[in-house]
Image (tube, rainbow, N blue to C red; front, side, top):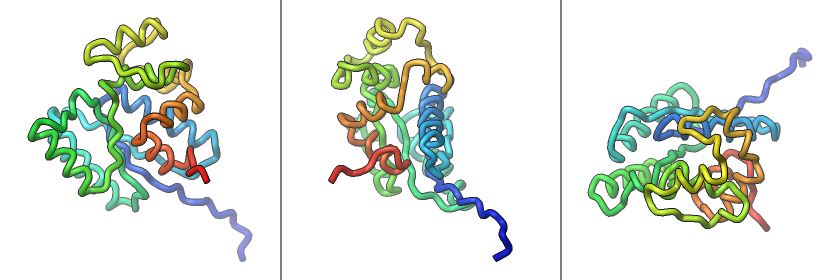
Length: 187
């Protein structure tokens, strides 16, 4: 042995984000993984300006394929607003089918990103505000919140513990955290 230090290669996970807000959330997940000493790299990609759910899903598949050609991916996930990815519409059903075929973890934010963030506050894990009401509910708890916050701004209010608390009631988020290594199966 030559005595050279080998650097452990990071496991790569593709994370397609509906927009800038979701990118910030992805970045705090990366920071939590780094803080925990996990050898994981989230390949965070903004899917805009793709538009409707099927276009976003197709863009996620294409971008993840591009990334997989660079280096292997251990997993693929996408963060979507539930009010945007409506499985009752034809394009929503096609998007969900495509993402399932491509083995994506689909994290649905109910009804939107602000609804997901609202659930990070203790006692609000089960909140499910109607579409159009989550921003007001969130701002009542976090007056400084605004759309497209940076990871640093999000970390002012969100902790790994709050993310795990939400994942206890949001199975898809739990699957993503498990893929990253931030949670384990309970035995």
